[in-house]
Length: 192
Image 1 (cartoon, helix red, strand yellow):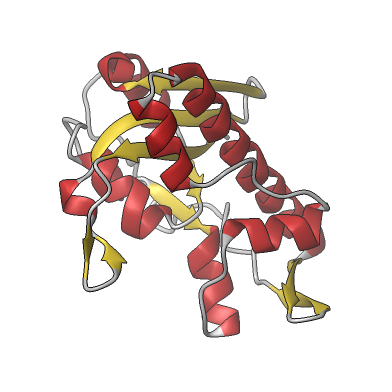
Image 2: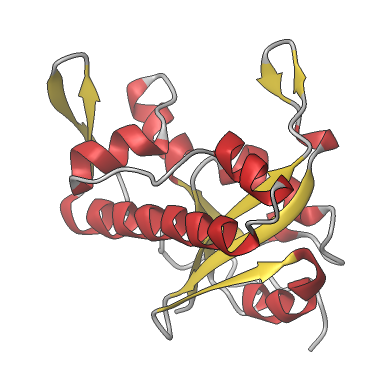
């Protein structure tokens, strides 16, 4: 069963009432991990036609804040509807249990012992400076952290985060993350 873990980077950071406004953002890079090949790759905006078949064959898309950010932005470029493919948004899963959102970096540091290599605003600066490979590397590193958190949660049924001075554990019910769909229907939206 092919699981694609992914992350996107954007440019043109805009905000509305203190929140990031995704409608004004342009996609720059998509980083992915393919569970079947165990490979990490990335795609620039003009390479997206190579990404679509990979996503179409996915049983599930795994991301961090992907339901509210990555998928809606990527869907603006996609000729089908990515929201029809099963999604596991780790941030949403944590929020269901904890009642609040946590940063990817917080979970990664407490669970994996290492954090992010930058942040999204820094990636925008790097892109504007023409440091495209640095943005690709940063995006892939976020995908790597997300994939490792996903694997950890599946194996242990929990993730960790630092709350003030203590490291706390969040118990997660991962039983439905990769469970067969009840309808058995395919989620493909493009003909192949």
